[in-house]
Amino acid sequence: MKTVLLIILFIWGIPSTYFRSRFRKIVYDTNDWKINIKPLFRKEIIGLFSNLYPENNQYIRIRKYYRIYLIIYLFLFLIYLSYG
Image (cartoon, rainbow, N blue to C red; front, side, top):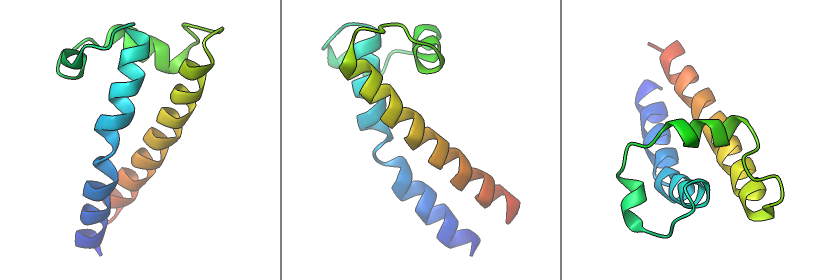
């Protein structure tokens, strides 16, 4: 069962680059691909838990999807740990 959960975690982790990239591009207001490899966490974390751009509907929508994705990822990880 633990192997199956590890495979599920791996597969669920694949789209993380897509969601994080879109979210970071809005938060840091750039289209540069290098934003994906830079360790700029502070503004990203603030943007995830607060509302940096209340008038930007795309930001709000992407943030909601990214939050849902991360919550599901957290639950899968906790389930994986509970089988340890």
